Image (cartoon, rainbow, N blue to C red; front, side):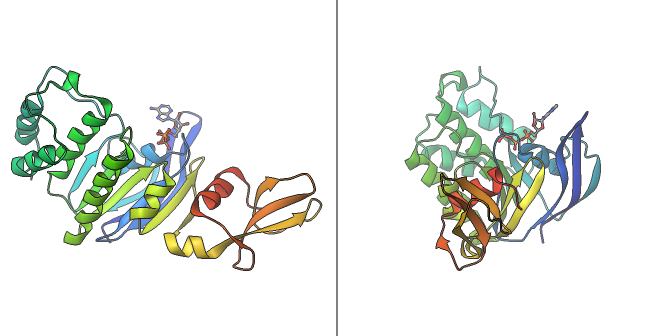
Length: 257
Ligand SMILES: Nc1ncnc2c1ncn2[C@@H]1O[C@H](COP(=O)(O)OP(=O)(O)OP(=O)(O)O)[C@@H](O)[C@H]1O
């Protein structure tokens, strides 16, 4: 186990952004922390990194962490080359060679000023600077934000490749299809709580959809209210197969009854 979060609570004044959550990330796995806007994902990552003070709970990290923040801001007046130099001077275990390999793979010109990079290119540079660090756990907050589908796939491949060397990845995303491609396990977060936490395949196999008359209730998530019946997502393999997108939607939207 590389990371163990137990009963983490983070409050901002009256708002409980992270409400008593627990999960573990194992060595060599990609763990996806999913949830809608404002679910508490970034707050969770920041508590793990010590960038936010937790209110209670326990966080155990076994190894070095490299972090890709959600707000990908870099010194605008520097060139790509200068940014790599600076990162090398202030970061432990940073490989300049690896950073250059990555920016070449992304076809970024080292002489370009950061202010002239497109949004996607800025993400590529930031990813290069993060993956060029030798770490045991890579914490990536929305690593594919603003990237086109081709570039997204390249980044997902790079993330997956990290696990071949036994590295672990904790990452957040809104894009279910990409999570399906690379995550081993996921946690679905909503309103500060983890509502589901399991192997992706198990989650997919455990849930199915059933239609019930309007006045009937069952144990599950009320997913869709139709004219004559309601559709429930239930923990059973008896009903219709559902996609991970549909399960996610039902868990986040519906209430477990
Ligand atoms: N510094 C802060 N001060 C006050 N409230 C905050 C602060 N940071 C986050 N919040 C609130 O905490 C809640 C969780 O925010 P957080 O950024 O952790 O969610 P998130 O799941 O990462 O969302 P997103 O996907 O939109 O980035 C939100 O209601 C947000 O408004």
